[in-house]
Image (cartoon, rainbow, N blue to C red; front, side, top):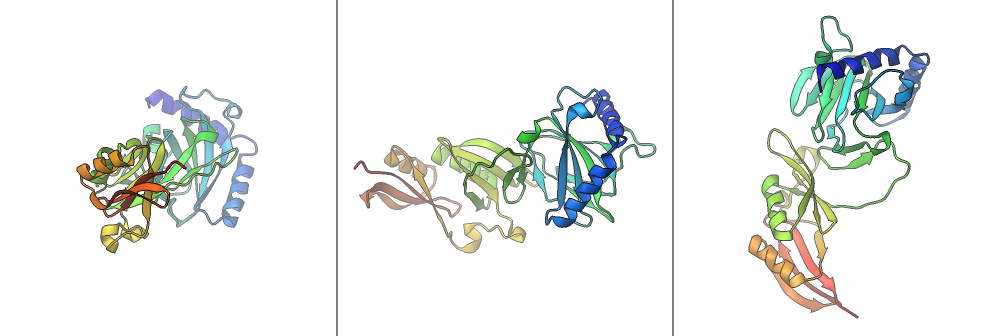
Length: 291
């Protein structure tokens, strides 16, 4: 973001915090935080109500109150660039693996480039308030009802503001050697990347799809209770991949490096075979037989 655009956001925040009712909004959010088990709560600000010109890319504005002494949880936004400034409190940030001390809005001797965070799509970030609850203002490049958060370690996804919740279920495969696993599934299953983020250490969280059927792959994280089959000595679930031509899909997986466990055969109303991938996950590849 250009310096002149940060100046626009800086002026907008100055106007926002001076508006009648702003302190009452913060008091209400602080009350919600006391009643919530979450590390932060938020409120959406109508852009038209700010009364200031904004950069053309900005689509929504938010106020967040973050709980003192608790990390916000490492997450990323796959569909928005975040522009954030701290207006109350103190603490540290970890953005893209880089830790630094946070400077408050219009801190003495600091420019907007020093106080504002511009966090790109897919960049993991976490904030650690110290001493008191932290208040930040964030501007995003997506609409309020489209802002998605994905937890870095678990891949759990949520929309902050949603007119309704659509149910979905997708497995996340914990693996060692995440980058190699993603490459394997592309070759073995014909998977395509829907979304991918990688930290400086090379650990991956990736959303993949096989003909529209989605699953996730992530490097294992034993401190967070996420273990790969290689760490456990075997898996506890089997993936069932239903395709039009199981024989061809089975052969493709084996050629790519999967181990054949049961050849493709007809039984129990299905034509199905089973393979074990190089990362310890078991796949049953088949289709129901015509009745």
